[in-house]
Length: 102
Image 1 (cartoon, rainbow, N blue to C red):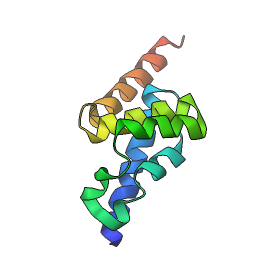
Image 2 (cartoon, rainbow, N blue to C red):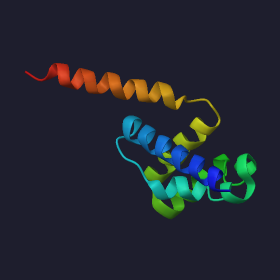
Image 3 (tube, one colour):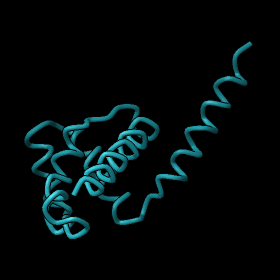
C-alpha cells in the first residue's frame, strides 16, 4: 500500500511539472481528485474519473483552468502525451531563456 502511495505522489509531481511546462500553471487538487481511487484500486483506478466526463465536472467545480489541467492529466495517463518529452521541452525552454539573456 505504501509503495502504491509513493508511486502516486511521484506521478502527481510529474503531472504538476507537465502542467507548469505546458500550461504555465498547475492545480494539484485536480490531480488528487482524478487519482483519488488509486489507493484502493491500484492501476485499476483509471476506471474512476479517467473519462472526458470528468472534465465537465472539473470545469463546473473549479473553472477552465481545472479542465485544462484535467485534460493534460488524462492525455498523459492515456500515453498520448509523454511526460519525459514534456520535461525535455522544459529543459530546452530554460536553455533558450538563458541564452536569450544579454
